[in-house]
Length: 194
Length: 194
DNA sequence: TGCATCTGCCTACGATTCGTAGGCAAACTG
DNA sequence: CAGTTTGCCTACGAATCGTAGGCAGATGCA
Figure 1 (cartoon, rainbow over the protein chains, first blue to last red):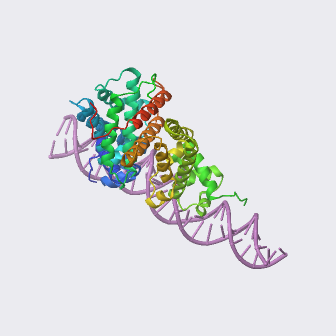
Figure 2 (cartoon, rainbow over the protein chains, first blue to last red; figure 1 turned 135 degrees about the vertical axis):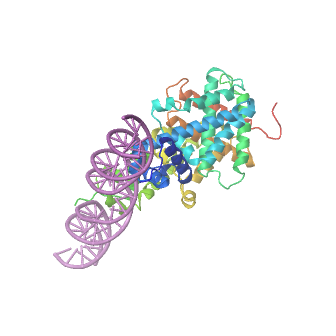
Figure 3 (cartoon, chains in turn brown, purple, green, red; figure 1 turned 90 degrees about the vertical axis):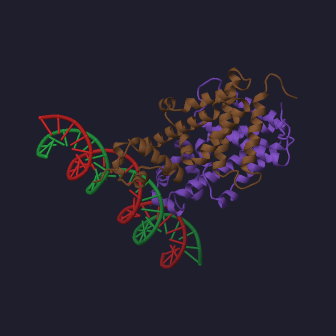
């Protein structure tokens, strides 16, 4: 029997491509085996089980996104950095919908801590260095950025802003404008704005 | 054989409860049959297939959410309405995580159009009547509200803001404060704020 | 080069799931 | 009280996950 040259890493990459083409839900041992031209049983010396496979795709996606966001943000500050940061997420989600879905898989705490997850939070904080936010306000802002970008890309991927007007690119730009203004004039809860 | 009194509606409700208890992914004909004490084959006179079951749960969740959001927003305006609107979504997602997940199921266009989905957009627009936004700006703002609330509840449900400080309730309040300020001073893209 | 070992993919299988076909009995209908 | 409808059943085929054990190609060593 010819050897297919299977590797955990190669299988993970193939599974990620499969996710982008057929959806993350289609990432199963059986489907992956068909894709690489091998019998399902042959995968189990490289992968523990179906959940292990999906987790590996999730970790890959988190790494790739952190790399791209890191590269996009490097050397930028202020609104430039904000636009690059959000754009990197949105572009990744549109180019790799299956991988993006995978990145939202629930990981157990130990795996999550060892993943690229924490790097994402660090990158968000790096962007906020261009704004005058300190202490808890910075944490609130990190969470807001995460919510807006994740929410926007999810709704966009689900077809929420489909083919209605105005187009999604316009709303995206306006959203970044709005966030920029908001971060520069972050409201102080002790003084009510009239 | 004793009759179990199955109904499409009753099965949908049981499936929704099952989703909240075991996760939306656990909503399968086999699991539902176990829950209601019946053989899997018995379900197929009430449900077309597994996808039909999940779709019904999604439609139920969209209805329930729209009802709750509608009740929360009724008789309120401005920031009051904004807080009630966001709070209704967040509370629903925390009380019914499985149903909330179900509501994010991709529906085919015809089903989506006939669902409570459009009501959600109308409710968002109703909230925005308390702010001075017109035309396309209102659409941008509707999308922003959707993104923030969906993103926040998703990340919160995934344990994103887990047991770190400051706590999630505080960030939530600050997020609503920030959105209120933003909607009142919606940036005009033609004039750069210095 | 020849031989032994190891590694990698295979076939075979049991358990579980989805969904269909057809049967039997309980519950309405006149 | 008979006839019909309705509702849940058993039985089954196809597909999936994951395990066990086998065989052959690759590798190491004399």
